[in-house]
Amino acid sequence: MKKLIAFLMALTLVLSLCACGPSKEEAKKSDLDYVKEKGTLIVGITDFAPMDYKEKGSDEWVGFDADMAKEFAKSIGVKAEFVEIDWDNKIMELNGKSIDCVWNGMTLTDEVTTAMDCSNAYCNNAQVVIVPKDKADKYKTAADCKKLSFAVEKGSAGKDVAEENKFNYTEVKNQATAIMEVAAGTSDAAIIDSLMAAAMVGKGTSYEKLTYTAALNSEEYGVGFRKGSDLVAKINDFFKNATKDGSMQKIAETYKIQAALIK
Amino acid sequence: MNTFFEYFPTVFQALNEGFLQTLKIFIVTLLGALPLGLIISFGSMSKFKPLFAVTKTFVWIIRGTPLMLQLLIIYYGPGIILQENVWGQGETGRFIATIVAFIINYSCYFSEIYRGGIQGVPHGQQEAGQVLGLSKSQIFFKITLLQMIKRIVPPMSNEIITLVKDTSLARIIAFQEVIWAGEAFLKASNGVPSAIWPLFFTGIYYLLFSGILTILFGLIEKKLSYFRS
Image (cartoon, rainbow over the protein chains, first blue to last red):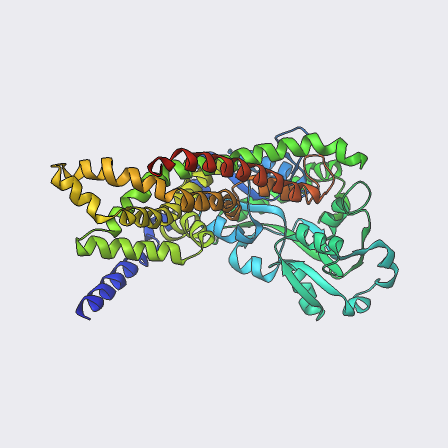
């Protein structure tokens, strides 16, 4: 019995040591200095056309967000480096410093804005309903969709919308899985970003029989940084300048999303 | 069906690259965990009580929690607690964190298999060694180890084939192994319109690889059957 108590005490001691937490002086260093010192801005992304994706046979990340990120990195004198992340872990990636910002068509939801410091919105978006083509006529508005079972991405803006509308929904790993659920018939419908929907379903894809209908809300995209980061002010300036000199519009036109830009 | 043949080369290449990463985890984990497991098994058979207690607790924690959770803690833990990403940036950092987690996890499982193998060798054999005047290390290497190896082949092959499939857990920290590569095609990627079949196709890789391993272990078992005449 004594041994057991001694062992438990030792265990508590070890655990309490682990819990000491962040060292104070490190946290004081400015995020901008940290990035400049490394010489790279590491951008957390997922494969998400037309925001971040690779052309066939190319190893370079392109897309509206990717091109803007390269420009932004240039403006603060560093190189942009892209790292594919698991979208669920974006906040952990950011806080663990394996990335410096999340810039991937990220909807500014409450969850996002409380966990990160975000830039001003730069792009409009909507959440749309994905249904099989032959049933599309029946589901034009949110009210029509009440009886459907939905698949939504875990922790996404689509999930928030489903909740608001009191839909019957299941949370799945990501937006791609949500669409697969509809294609496989395991869910009646899915809710995903309109920009992504436009790129994912239709002719030539595995989802030829799917289409998107009702737009459930309108929302905005922003870029996320660590809490307290001074890069946020930098990026807002950058967006302002890029809008003024027309470079943002030009990049948007390259990827055909100019209609969604916020001026 | 046309599109299948049109895009197959691109998908095949991407999956091959992914599977190379899977193989890398597999090989490095084995290289690390096979010896480390033996060391841990000595700890769990130690007569020195504190070492015994520490090893047993360690094995209990590692075997008692999911590998997926260990990956998350090992990769994100240091950055969040110390405010410093100890693993280095990019793909290399993720790979190192992945194999650290895998080696620790698998060496604990291996250690128990080793322990069973060592303790399964009849005690009389060690006594016989002592009578013949062999030293402790001679007894271990020449008598115990030799017989242990052939005893542990079936349970080890089981564990190693599990490892083949467990490598897919590394995708939780965005290490781009073959399942990740397959999933990437669910969305339009690399100029290929969104497609579901690449994800299912990854199963072929696992099947082929575990098939090869099964044959290999069958051969090893046959080769090691020398004590039964």
